[in-house]
Amino acid sequence: MKKILCSIIIVLPFLVSKAQDCKAYIPYEKGTVTEITNYDKKGRSIGVVTQTVTAVEHKANNATFSVHQVFEDTQGDGETIETDVTFKCVDGTFYIDMNGYMDQKQMQAYEGMEVKVSMDEIDIPSSYKVGQQLKDGYIQMDVSGGPIPIKMVVSIENRKVVAEEKVTTPAGTFDCVKISQDVVTKSIMNMTISSIEWYAEGVGMVKTETIRKGKLMGYSELTKFKKP
Image (cartoon, rainbow, N blue to C red; front, side):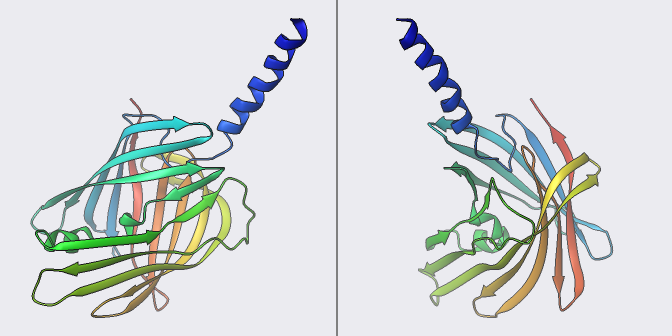
């Protein structure tokens, strides 16, 4: 009996450790609310994204995080758009929902049409090294039922871990992984921009910068972080 109990005690810590191998770059707790403010190149607020973690589900060493997002236009007519995204931890790797790279106003314009979406998610492994190349990804949208069929593909390419940095925003100071990448949009008009994103474990995106032809187009910062 003592040998059996000893075996259980040894195995259980291993299982707990295995379940915690994945670092999630999203809040761990249901009910956590974050606010990201988007700015133009002159530092003027153009929009606010409020994210609320609505569910956290664990299974074996995997986890799923459901997030409700509300986009508010602070520069135009104050229009709000709501959407839901899902983030995952699978076998030690954190996966980012590619729907976040689609223009939500544009998506709303296709309401009532048949929209088919396919994607290959980008990720952040729990074990990475500065200088490491990361997996590319894409999201493709095919729209039918309108005057003409529309196909749009947004590809995230040339992803690289640039550094580990402390980043201070109005929400606090966070230990972040800094990732650079190219965002390539192919549709009626094609466009390529570069972006830099800072992520903090248990928090999510803390800061972003969008660059085109070497010039800053705009940036985002985490302006609120509230746990339940």
